Length: 138
Image (tube, rainbow, N blue to C red):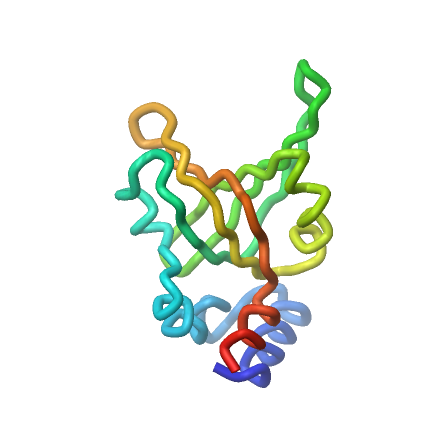
């Protein structure tokens, strides 16, 4: 995957506000798979506490107030097969909030957190932008 394809996907989304040809992660899926990234489909089968890597286009970042006053970022990202729920706690926010708030596509590493019958989220430990990931492949 090259940066030309990344730029083309970014321009398409910026000017059209949609990706017409395919999901913006699709051109990178082979590289992501080779580095052990799970998909939203595969995430459903992971055990609580499992360390995972996922990638997605950011759909929503929400920081509602809590009773304790601690701001937690709840993030919804989307890959080619569905939505991924992520949680970014204050300690990691200091390190990664800027990336989350400024990038359209991010790569996340963290721990699976299972809640209830089918609820799965990832507690984020590390965030990377797509361009940094691609530079690391060279």
